Image (cartoon, rainbow, N blue to C red; front, side, top):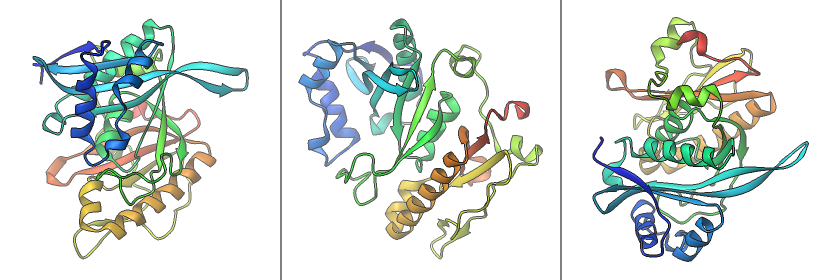
Length: 292
């Protein structure tokens, strides 16, 4: 899709478009809408709001602001990417990638090299964008990051999140955002390398994938951790099973990060009409570059 353009949103006249789009993306959560006055205050103090438009209709936005992180050498400045939303009619059309790429360019002009944000690790399409296409990595799992959420996409489940690190000046990121971007991994790459999921998935009577009862041992430097390809559909069909997945992946990733594994890639494979989503966990500095 190429018939949209991206521009900075900086005026009170345009900010209501961001408020309205939030309502389209996260229905039934009016109290969670970031209001105009907060958006304006942020952009007047180093924050960024970028909108994707078809003519004058906003179809997506990304919003972030400067923040500090704690390091052994003291506080360090970063950019906190707080929210990105794409209108339901324009998902899977490249808008999210284009918005993040524009954000990448703007934050580099601010002389920052680190952007962080959070997302639900059970959402395969978000993982594919954030980890596989943008080149973010993750070593941080946050339990119930936003408390009890009330919108229809999150209500009833603990709001566990990955906090990802986007090191925007690294070759890793540049190779994904450049004109000749690095191809994303497929299952054929890992299979040829002899790498397979390190736990089996069962199927329920409704045909939904079930997590293992126990966390498997972490024996190899490269591991594939599979999650449901479409968690929201699973959640609608079997809410109890969705909770099982939340608590299984909570234990899985907390254990992985404690053992010094890093989420470095994601495979979203739709071959043969059987979509699958798998995280690549690497130990230390190991990568899958050798398989590309």
